[in-house]
Amino acid sequence: MVGVLKDLSPGAVARAIEWNLFGLYATFDRIPGARVDHEPHLMRVCTGLPHELLNGIFRAQFPTDDIDGSIEEAIGDFRSRELPMIWWTGPSSKPPELGKYLENVGLVHAGELKGTAVELDTLPETTPTEDELTVEAVRDEPTLMAWLAPLAFGYEFPEPAALALFDLFLGFGFDSDAPFQHYLGRWKGHPIATCSMFFGGGVAGMHTTVVPAYRGQGIGAALTLSAMLDARDAGYRVGVANTATNGSQVQGSLGFKSYCHLGLYMPTQWGGLSATRGGVVGDGIAHRSWGHLLR
Image 1: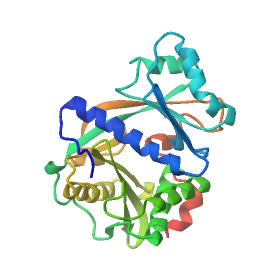
Image 2 (image 1 turned 180 degrees about the horizontal axis):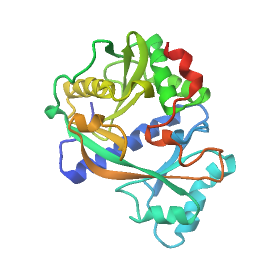
Image 3 (image 1 turned 60 degrees about the vertical axis):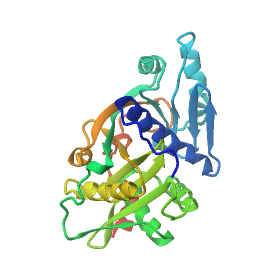
């Protein structure tokens, strides 16, 4: 465990929310064929995989002089390869009105996420769940494959993208101190929900998805709580999550509070994916090709 966040002031927590996200995406450089550029004024993640959540631009900071040209240069590789992508804005973005400049060059404001956090010592020990639900930490390859199905189904990942993520996470291993910790929720034995926890920026980042037919039953809260209690036991003080402003109630039920907002900007002129696709903020229609793996 390295550099656990101790400054719990609002500004420090907001920065940690962003840096946890940046750190997670930086690990994508381990995907074959992917490239992560750490430049002074931005981080560019280009996996080459056909999903907007797997390609993007982060922590961009530009002077206003010729900012349109800087933006065009930053997205040039995505445009030439017709890759779906997201440009993320947040508290660290400069200028603060960067989103307006992104729209000026043709990107569409596709949504907002709330950057939320909770102090782990305030968590309840349990949350109401049904007896049919079981939650387990992923500790071997077969369980990771079972975990993959609801993740891919919920986020609409095509098979190449899902399998690349499987290989990425498999490569990090299953030790309790690995940067990623995964949890699988089963309903009557069937895999229907996942939580991935990433340690970075001094905090534990939560990424939870539930197959649409099983939402609204406290399943996401149960998985998120299991992960965060493990993070607390490991010495972390803060859990963070990025959620749609009109999305999951999981974070509210566990005491998460909003510390910042993250803007999502997407192209509409290449890649064949709409900037209004719900999967960007976690409420997408399930990808039917994964349905048979949920049985």
